[in-house]
Image 1 (cartoon, rainbow, N blue to C red):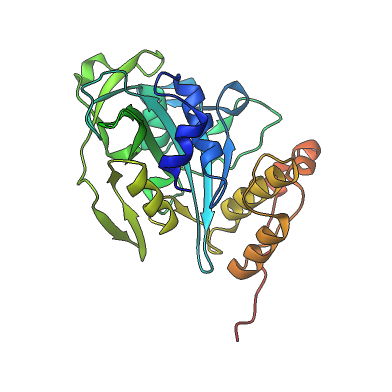
Image 2 (image 1 turned 90 degrees about the horizontal axis):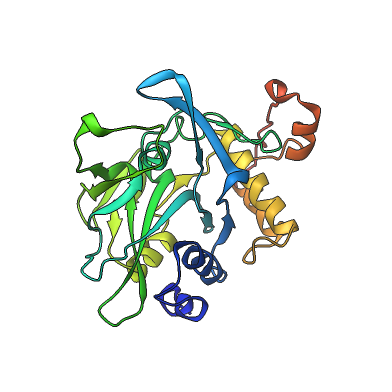
Length: 284
């Protein structure tokens, strides 16, 4: 079943934003691994761009989506919003807290606020593709059903005066997509779609690996982190699509080894010495 069909089973158009992205997570179970990273547990800290002496705290996203095929793997952090206006048009104006937009759209160096959570500080700043940070807006479509548009967060530009920007406030500002709808661009050999008007196009783009940051051997630190995160989520029954064996096979295919258990790294407080080995796989 498609995302569009599946999400109708798990939520209603009257559902709130949290219930909607949880419904979206359940709808992915046939082709992607999706983790719920919403809330205080996954709060990140980064410097206020207007005052570097001040740290801003913000949840990293709502969902972490991980998808792959035989040759490539991608991941994206998706922040969801709900359009409450009945006149909302796909990829239209939507309110987003500045801190959420800055985190996923301006790619700062980060650190986890929760000491029990480990995340590479350069996971955003060292990106290859901007679609590592994504925005999905739920809306009621012309059939009266739940739908969602998609945009690269970096392509959402504020429509308000820059003099009114306050990153320390959680008060949302109005943003509008400023890219080319349904345009697929090529960056460093990777395809990336700028926006999708609905869940049908979004699903097609996710499956075609046109959304998200590539998992690559040339960036083993980040790649190992994401693969380890997904592997641990599978072991904890937080992801339903892949098996642990699937991830191990993917590691071998992409030449990314797992250095050691992330929790053990945190417990040892030896993060600066977290080094990764890359497996050299002989290709036939």
